[in-house]
Length: 615
Image (tube, one colour):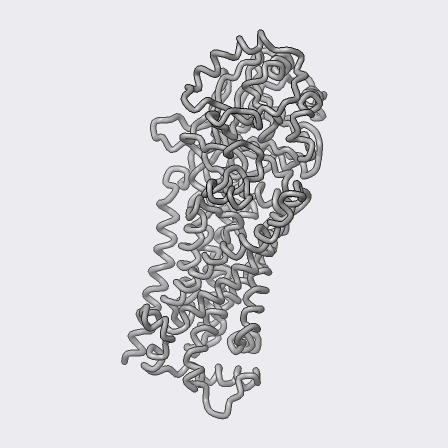
């Protein structure tokens, strides 16, 4: 361990950057579909040592390494570390700042720490998000040129956040175990920022190293994803405390952080097992769910000329006999179809509504993803009132014109979930609030369109965001908290925030992960959706075009599932919700408390170090 530490701390230039990149990439193995938790231990331990290296680098340039010691000789370097020769510091330590750091009143190595954090984060996000490149191959003639922006450009941007996380940690750096909490506080803050800045993208948050395991994920019911992040960083970086650059460690003091981390992990596992051992909440009586996973190829799914074939495929699938004997004679009361199910505007297509209405049994409802169009000055109620008139004028559905491309500019389009009754009427709508930049709309549209760019979805002007998060309802069914695609990855933002609104009975997630094929992406998406069930104490009903579709209970247990790439239907009951967990009641309180605890420990340790240096 000492030789490994000495090798990392003595690395300079491209060697250190390569080590940082590789250490970050290893951490991605802790994410779905691998969920290899020890990988995060390796990655976070290396992260601590990388910051140690930045702290050591500036004094080394001032010849604080004893004369005659060759840093390339790792054995000598390790012996010098053990003897304390490398750890002797004077007030010159604080005066050895670079010119830039001095002007900003930053301690030595702060900007070096940012650089190490950027390379570490770049490796982490390249290894964890490489699958984004698959989306650029769906329409390769138009988007292949932009593939490097997805697989390298986005990771390069996201790496800025751990870069600043490392820098913040350096500001509170101290020898011993205090630096573990400095890193936890730094990365905890920047991971929260990553989930909020520029619409946010909290994908593969470090807390998912614990959140990917059903047992350890139960802690999210108290602290949420961002609280898991602070705890994960502090706990998984504990082995780094075995080596410290400026503290003479006894075997006991070196082992204490590791033992404390093991005790914390044991407590988390114990809590998870205890929570999962609680009585089963049961199912909602009288409700049978049928989820359809059509597994349509995207090059065919969005073609208006395939309208009749696509709807026929859906109705044939949805009408299959149940494979589960428990639902063989049950009539589904809740049908769920995935995001953007149709290559046309459902509310404007009387033929399609008639077909769906004729298919649905009485007292049954379809919740489906669909593009919704609305005149800019038109109220939503007007659209519902005109449905009957449109059906009277409908033909047999032979119109192949693309209704999206031919719409007037005054029309706004929404990525919606719509509730259709057995009579073919649309009873309720939810418009997606949190849109995907460059996928569903184009930021700075007027500028970027002049440069030849457009969003992935062919909708004039892109989708417009919905006005507010709201529940969906249908007679005889519990209210649903609708989530379109990646809206489900934002902790604390999945249910309506109106304090007067009724708590929903379940989370309804419709998505189309077919953009990413048979890669890690859909598995990572699914893992995050499951964590929302644990945080909110609500079951999840999920329909995905190509998988993973599932019914998940309020503890995150997957009751029924259609795997990635399968075509079929999934029958099951609607699990009951449980009492709202602490996180659902106070979505920010516990997270802030955990973060401030890490910050306080780091600050006290740092203050003690400064006090000793000034004596």
